[in-house]
Image (cartoon, rainbow, N blue to C red; front, side):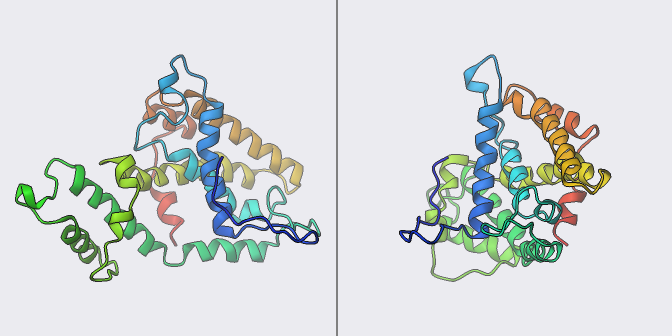
Length: 249
C-alpha cells in the first residue's frame, strides 16, 4: 500500500502515531490489498479487485470495521498502548465506536447525494446545458437541498470529486457495499466473538475461523464469481440491511 499518512518524526525519543481516521483509512485500503493478494482465479482480469463495481468495496469496508468495533478494540487483538502494551479499555473502545456514529445520518445522506449526482452525470439522461438540462453545479446544489444536506452556495466541491472519473455511474456501490460489509461483519466475525469464551486466545481463534470463511468463500474468487452467490455463501442466507442501520444508532 502507498498511503499519504502522518509523516515520520525526526525525534529519536518519539514514535510516529496515526490518528484514528488514518488507521481506518489504512485498514480500508488494506482490505483492497487483501482482496488482490488472496484471490486465486483462472483469468488475471478477474482477480482481486477486478470485480463488480457495486461489490468491490465490500472487503475494504469490512476490514475498516476492525479499527472501530469495540469488541475487537478491547479484546487485545489489535488495540494496545504503543508503550505500555495494555489493551484498550472497554469504556474507551465503546466511546470510540460511539464517536463514529456521530452525525452518521448526515454522512449517509451525503453519500446518497454523491451517488445520485454520479447517476445524473453518467446515467441515461445526463445533466448538461448542451442537452437541454441544468449544469452540474445546479444539479449538485439541487440534490443537496432535496436530501437536506448543508450546501455552501457559490462553491464547486464536485469539481474535485475524483471518484466521479473512476466510478462512472457506479459510485452508489460505495454505500451499497457498506450494507453487505456490515452484515458479513456481524454474521462471520462478531457472532463468533460473542459465542466464544472470554480468553483472548479463544477469541483470536474464533476470529480466525470467521476470517478463513471470508477468505475461502469470497476473497479467493476475486471477480470471477457472482457477488450474490459469494455473499449468500458467507452469510448462509440472504443478505440483510438490518446490521447497517443498527450500526447507525
